Length: 206
Image (cartoon, rainbow, N blue to C red):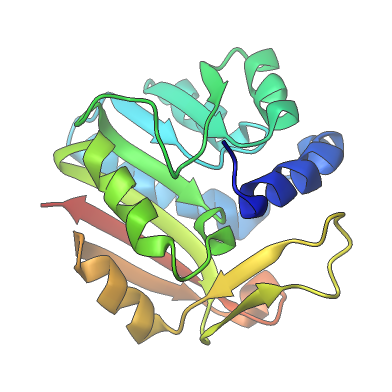
């Protein structure tokens, strides 16, 4: 059963699925994919799980690079668009990933965990840790730079979305409880054009 947080997020993204599918991937996000691809290619990884996959653009990129991908999202409309791209995909919450332990070599999560309330983030990280192989890699990308959480009142999505942000050190502290930080990079506000900078993190299961 979905919680209120997930229900609202699902409704918000269902309504924006077609619009998001027709938009171009920003150049700085393309670079993020390439950074992670270098890591997983160097370690000869074969499988990748994307959580919060949206319309599947990133999953498709990794599939085209030869990886066996699986895309999950809480939005049925988003998952339908993933399937239309020929991707293996299913509606699934990252609170409860329906996979055996140690199923994937790598995990990709771009701008989805910022919708998780701070009270829940450790449980979600624990679930992600469960499904990635020992020594496997986990890419986490989120906006941040300050500590705050709540509904974004200026949001043009309906229902308005919930966001949770961490300053760099707070994010590192939480992630370090579950993973080894291999790489931490900040993409500045000026590059992405917004209120927050972007925290790009590559983590290793341990």
